Image (cartoon, rainbow, N blue to C red; front, side, top):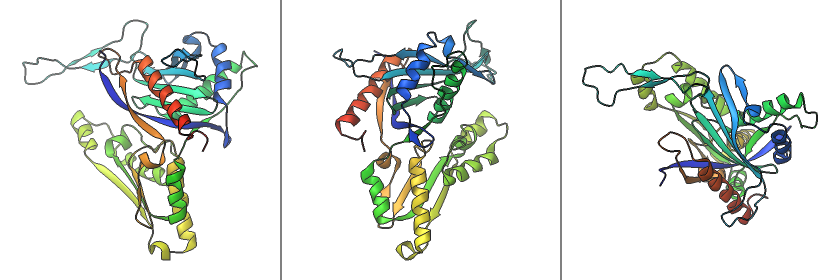
Length: 322
């Protein structure tokens, strides 16, 4: 039996120019013009990104068609070697070595799995392949293929996180007392957390990472993961503050919630003391997904099952129509 790992899957919506965008229809045209994996490949700065698997007629466990389409996107650095270490070092120091990929291959570093139904998107990223990066890749692919296929819709999309309306109403009804963001120095510097954020507060925290962006040893990188940085925006006077200040706090809170890059490490406290966290306002779910052999990668079939079942669950709860 395959080993499993815990992943968080997210419900997003595709948008273009602030309007919902039928990504399924557009992507079916793209895939019809790109019958092979190589046809979907985009290379930027030696980074290869491509659609590794596609399922154009997904089915449930009973074999019934469920609509939509499933894609698995992989990304790796061309000709990149990986560092190795000895399992049984007998000397004081282990200088390790490097391992090259097989000829004609690259190491799969990042991947994402998407279930797309109209403008609805269920997203599962692995290895820090973000939803915003995937949206950019799909847009670039449509533009590239359109050069020889005028029937392809040229698009430039973004993925917008979907909030839980019940929790969002608390912010609107009770106002916002404070907004707190938390991230490790490692996330801010190494993973460039929040560098693509639209939220003003998240961007501000992301800029703190520039303090730590120097060439570091492994020990220093490990130390960065133990350093946490908090940014808090606090409303003085609570409900007695000016209407303008209260409105600004509410706008900033809604910005955080609407930003698909901010999926963790924040809390919003209302003026009546309710604490709202990511799991409260962004429709997401933790699931167990099978790992690909002994590699740090996910089994496509396991990931596809998890994300398609989550969408059916959201549909049954009428959360895709809110």
